[in-house]
Image (cartoon, rainbow, N blue to C red):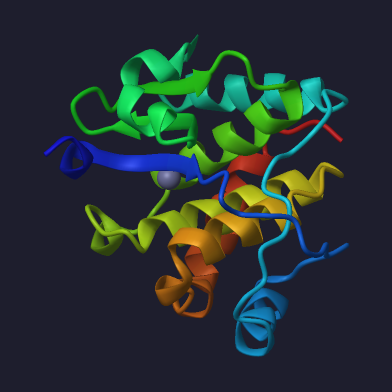
Length: 192
Ligand SMILES: [Zn+2]
């Protein structure tokens, strides 16, 4: 089955309707949000292109860690998902682990968030390989890298995690040190 080969996929359902926003996030606050508001479905799409510099820095980090970054029409690759109304913003699979794919029509801020997420997979603990819980790890890394650069993707991340990975939010606490280490490694290439 195709999905079995995908170790990284940022697939956001358009079924996630907007109902709230959060201005700031720490990993612990996301856990608290999880406990208090299990039905949150905020806006999932990141707008704007002010963070093109962040995107460029993340591309540089991807290259420094042995990846090539390719922008493509992912609806051609994931026709079934697109037909169902979902958007695949990026992916990274174990058939070609050196390539990170990004949806070419995404704006720079969404691409930066997506690339930070895919880079999060590069640093995920081996115990999370081939597990859906790896998406929580990757997205936590992405939220923190983006926030460090001033780009708030909290509401998008919450929509994604609650829409598809709510059962795996334990990763935020269990792998907190590994998440912080991944963020620090990526941030070495992010200009302030
Ligand atoms: Zn992923």
